[in-house]
Amino acid sequence: MEKSESKVLSYIDRDEIIEFMQELIRAKSDYPPGDTRQVAEICVKKLKEYDVKTETLIAPPEVKSINKDGVENYTMPSVIAKIEGAGEGPTLLLNAHIDTVQAGDISAWKHDPFAGIIEDGYIYGRGAGDDKGSVLAQIIATTAIKRAGIPLKGTLMVNPVADEEASSYRGVKWLCDYGYLNPDMVIIGEQTDNEIACAERAIVYFRVTIKGKASHGAMPWMGNNATVRMAEFINLVHQELIPEVQKVKHPYLPPTTISTTKIEGGIKTNIIPELCTLDIDCRMVPGITEEFVSRRLNELLEKLSKSGQEFKWKVEVIYTEGGIATDTSPDSPLIKTLLNVAEEIKGKPVKPTGYKQASDGRVFAKRGIPIAIFGPGDPSLGHSPNERVSIDQLVEASKILALTILRLIG
Image 1: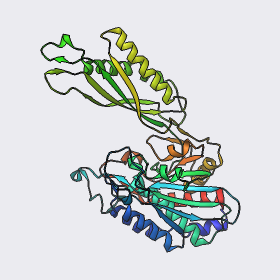
Image 2: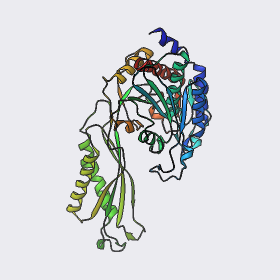
Image 3: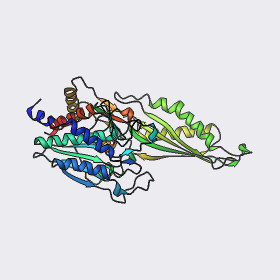
Image 4: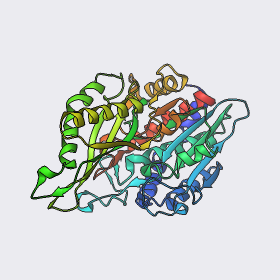
């Protein structure tokens, strides 16, 4: 380890990390409403404490979420901090979201989810892992480099961002579309237990509508029950399509999942339903595309219609990022540097992995930008009661990020 690297690591202080983490957790930013004003101010305060240039940005009113939530954009500020190098080096972006999901049933929590209680080496609270632990590690690594006065050849950007839990329309998507974020490589902060993830499945939400024929409940043979036809369609999806897509493998990811999650049909108990809608959550590995799944859904509906009572149908895409999965080569400079640094800090071999959940990485993936997903916290605890993050992992993540920054753009 070089002298400059040791100097940077000396500015990563465990007590400061604990205090900062508790402050972040105590600043409620759960969605809905996803009000990130307080937590954004805390991030800006910490960055300015060490003279890191910051800017607070809010999407204009015309930028709407796909969620019909009625939330005002002004309550969702994001932060961009920057350390500009003297050379012509690349721009490295550290991105992690400052909004969280709601705490849910408070009685299911061991501790107040917004108190930041410490127990057995963990800090408890909503957002501890998802995603304020990564926010902290990225900011602490950045301020350590600034405090050490180590010059950079490239530009470091840090982006504590809003609106990730509401599909990112007023967060990363807006910042990218309007030119505020145009990095050469990105480290997305998410809870990975400080493992290095280089892949993430693409997400598409489909909506299937079947139109049958209504009739009196006393004479069902006069109608064509759309809800029954939908149940038959769901069975076909599970029998034929899911086994088909699961044949396509990826070394770091779970197989493609097609989950039939939400069904609505009928208007009254004594009326045979004319319409039924089904929402489908689809997570696709590289090699499975949105177009392929859409085509196969239509083919199964056609098969079902021709095999019995005919009906009309429609397949819609109600949410997509263009079906682009995150799939960065483990041999890329970004992933190799992270792996090497992680091995050095952890003192044991580290292999690349995949990220099972969803992140803002999907927004950058369609722009062809190399992406790593990395951060402290157990991913199985996200969105659950008793969410917590290891203090040791917070320190470790901060050190790994600091050295990675130096070796990529220092």
